Image (cartoon, rainbow, N blue to C red; front, side, top):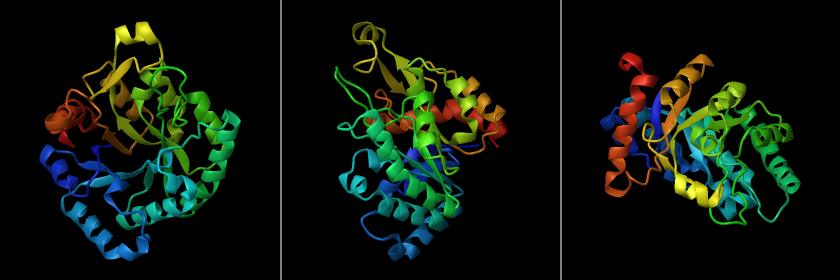
Length: 284
């Protein structure tokens, strides 16, 4: 396992080195996906060389645009192929993704849409030896009525997605924070879906008792925190990753409102302080 954080710029590699992270999950927002990837081979080679020189591994490319970008929703395969080209050029094997969700369609209609989109995407990924890791974020929040912006959810929804597209290339970017606030046992889910865990997000959850009392599951009765500053037991979580034989990337997804703005890097450092000894005992 290697600890990193979700980064949005290529030069975040310097921040990784400065704070002692041996890895990064790099967002595809760092690249221009409106042009064909084959036209920037030399630029990608330079990026790969830079990361090798700094001894920082890119454990996954994060491509979440399907959830909210109309151009990607209109022609997803073209954009995923461009992302796959970048992944191959950088030597990255995992592409983190959203499943997408069309709120104008029914549950059944969305499963059909998911199948229509991801059957060819996963077939193309499998041909190239790549993995698609779906972020388990449901994108709920706000007063009723509300509909998800992404399938996310929990085990029953994952089962439906994997049944719709039964591909070895399709799995999860497992984030315990999205399960914790729903009352879903994230440790049990981690064990039961271990063969489908292709990448991991490290994000904590702090429950807000007053909001929960007034709204229940609505209006987000929680807030996301840096690992160690919420209610998830990270020693247990990392130990379970080791138990199931997980050997991929663990990326801090920093959405902590306390350590935002000018304190953003402080949040990364605090997360590193909590997780690094668990993920890399002895500084390995």
